[in-house]
Length: 265
Ligand code: IPD
Ligand code: CA
Ligand code: CA
Ligand code: CA
Image (tube, rainbow, N blue to C red; front, side, top):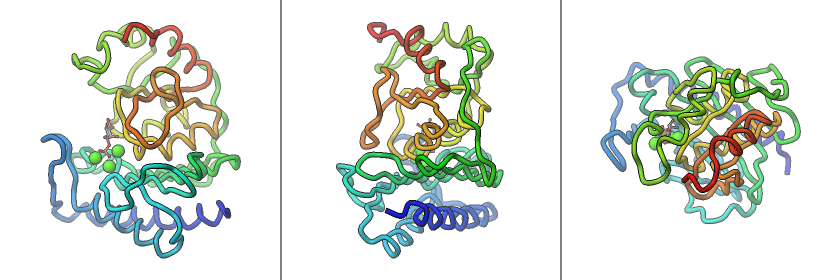
C-alpha cells in the first residue's frame, strides 16, 4: 500500500475542506440536534463528510468509510483499509466560537493505524503522521514525547468529571486534579490529543468517545511515543465507544496505577 500517496491525497482534501469551513463562517448555519439538545450538528458537518466520501470513493473505490454523520459505510470490522472520519470535531465550538474545532481523519489497515491527520482550521495548523515516518505540525517534525511528573503536568479533561453518572465514580480524579499543575478543557477530543502531541498539555482523559474522535489522534500520539488506551489501560478497538487516557510515556502508567485503580469504579 502506498501510504505516502494516500497521505498526500488526504492532506490536499483536508486543506480544501478547511477552506470550505472557513467560507461557511459568513453563512447562516442550519443547526440541528441529535441525541440531546446539546448534541449539535450542522449542514457543514454533513457537507464536509460528504466531500471526503466523494473524494475517497472516486480515488480509492476499495476503501471503506466510517464517518460520524453516518454518510459512509456501515462498518462492523476494520478489515482492509478503513477511513475513520470526524468532519468537524468540536461542533459546539464551531457554532459558538468559530475556533477550537478540527477535521480529524484516520486511515486504518486491518485495525492498525497508518495515517492520522488533524486540521485545526482556525489556526491553520495541520498535524499529520504516517506510522513509522514521524509526526509533523505543518512542515515541522514533532520531537518524541518526554516523561513528566504529575506535579509538572497539565491535564485536559472536561466537566463531566464533576457530575454524578452511572459510568464512573465522579470523585475518582479529585486527587489527580489536586496534584497536577493545572487542568484545561477545550471541547474537542481531536485537538486535545494533538495538544498532548505538541506538549501543550501532558495528558487527556475522557469518559466516553467514539472511534472518529480518536482514530487520527492515536496515530499521531503513538508515533511520538505517547500512550493511548482506555481508562483500564486496554487498547482501543476503533469500532466501539470507549473511555480514553492519552498521555506522555511514564505519566500514562502513573495515572493508571496511582489514580485509576481498578475496583474503585
Ligand atoms: C465531541 C468533542 C468533545 C467530546 C465529545 C465529542 P463532536 O465531538 O470531541 O470534546 O467531549 O464527546 O462527541 O460531536 O463535536 O464531533
Ligand atoms: Ca457530533
Ligand atoms: Ca468528535
Ligand atoms: Ca463531529
